[in-house]
Image (cartoon, rainbow, N blue to C red; front, side, top):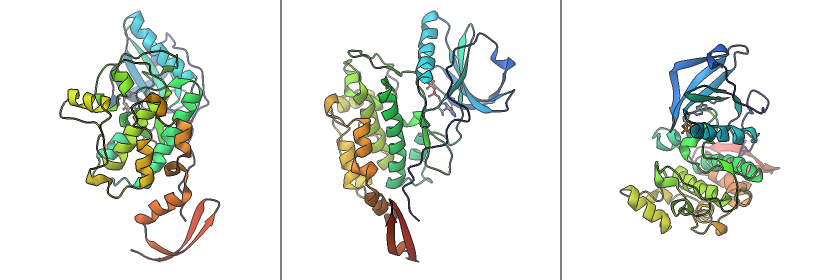
Length: 322
Ligand code: ADP
């Protein structure tokens, strides 16, 4: 049986909640596993933790924030997460504020960063895997954009896999996310410039298409393992982005479908207004055409003598291996 499984990932193990930071000691209610660091970010570390009363396993993101201004930035992240109730977006459970930091307690997922799957030689990412990943990122983005919220920091490090076994993902890190305000410009910390949209580099207005550019970069990377604009140094990378200079010339693209290339081509467009939206992306054949997905599936699969299609699911009779 073949099905390009479009079911959503499991929801968080708790109902959506509106969180306000509490002034209590987190240690009264949670046991933070200081040895188990899930990741380090810009502003602190993420640890595995357990809620003492329920036994629930969660992730605690400890963000250093001393000044009132730094605290406001973290409270923005909390406010954004309070508005987002979707299975492809990591859910917030609680928050604690103390003198030197704010701790966000979130839904925990176990499958590691999507980034690790790109670089892992042993994990052979197929085009169909990529379809499944990108479709879910698009669904999360479509919801965010419907709620009038921009992510503005989409990259493979901020996409987490739910488990090693399935292709289910959740988007994390709403640290730069914000409500869309027409005419808002964005100052970003240039960490790695590979994922920045031209309008961000040029300090022009950011909008929903800014996230769609990042989706194009992620798609390119998942399909090829290559970064489309990466130059020998940051300066060259920035120039490549501003010139919108990228191509499919590398041999990694030889086996990639025309639909996938068309999908990327409609996102890596310099002018914001010409990029596909999240809803348009979901309707693009690369993400929506079941017969294309069947072909992609067949490429790496045994030969089947007979195929029956019942409501988008293909049933096959087995003949042998190719
Ligand atoms: P920052 O905003 O500081 O970059 P992130 O929210 O991106 O922090 O988290 C940093 C890393 O911690 C992530 O890349 C991921 O590996 C890990 N991580 C974050 N949130 C979770 C979570 N809910 N479950 C499991 N691991 C997580």
